[in-house]
Image (cartoon, rainbow, N blue to C red; front, top):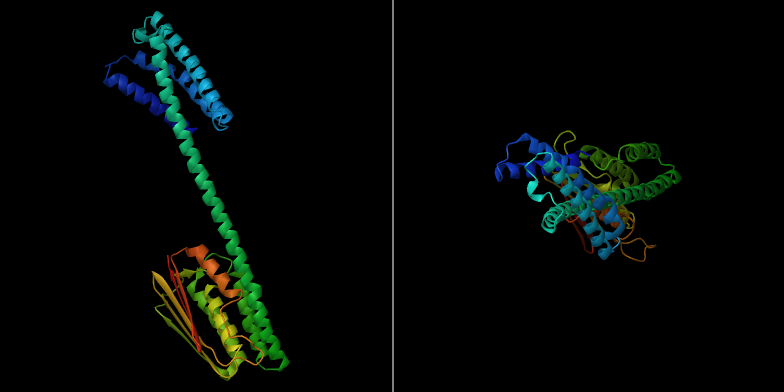
Amino acid sequence: MIYHAMFWLCYYIFGALISLSIHRIYDLRFYAELLSLLPPDMLLVYINLYVLIPAFLLKRKFPLYFLTVLMTMSATSTINIWLHHLYTVNGSPFFAGNSRLTIPDLAAQLINGIYLVGLTTALKFFKDTMQQRQRIREQEKQQIALELNFLKAQVHPHFFFNTLNNLYSLTLQRSDQAPEVVLKLSSLMSYMLYESGAPFVPLDKEIANLENYIALEQLRFGKRLSLSFEKEGMPPGDSIRIPPLILLTFVENSFKHGMSQTIGDGRIDIFLKADQQELIFQIDNSIGEPQPTNMSPPSSNGLGFPNVTRRLDLLYGSNYRLDKTQTANHFHVTLKIPLQ
């Protein structure tokens, strides 16, 4: 209603300024009479917008639409001419020149009606187009949010399945490390259940979660594993936020396809650098001799990599970089994401 009121106010002021600047009319009576001529114009506009366009134009009944618009403009033009005549017979000199129902006077009113209908119809379609685009954007955002939540939810059972297998192995060995594994697993579950639900989490909390996971895996592999985790340029506090569980997927993959599927010793090197513009994450794991039960070499296939790649696509589009390199002895991943 506010937008409509503003439109009609501007429409009236525009007509009044033309009369003042071109015709030099300074009589306030004229501007009161001019204001009273708005209702026929408003009737024409709203019949067109809310009756004729939905009933005919949007249904592609073009001949019927143009016929009914012309009939409506003729009716409102007749009303305007009648008002002009009414003011003229009551002594107003301002509308005497077009106060008769003649073809020239009717044509002049029709031209004004065509201008008004064209302008308001264009504004309506522009507004409808913007609203439609907004609805599409909102639907896309909702769809992306749903897909991200689904992908994030997939991380939880996938991760816990592997971790519980690790715990099961330790309990079979009656290892004294089992209670510590349970404690680490409890911390990981707490993070995933209560903190990773947000779209972005503080980087320091994500690092703490990574360190819990790494410590758990180090308990499992013991002296077989040589691991380094180097961090550079970590701003204090929670000034940097990243999507939760993104980095964990790559770390987990290094253990799953590096250490778990090979015999003998292995090495994992992790490097993390962050500033206010970009986060760089690199991880390199050795690939040793496959265990006898493995008929194929380790690879990056499986749930983890397609999952994290899809999440990165949805979150960053083409504004991130993910490089994977595999040789006979090493698998290397570099991830660069913008920080905002």
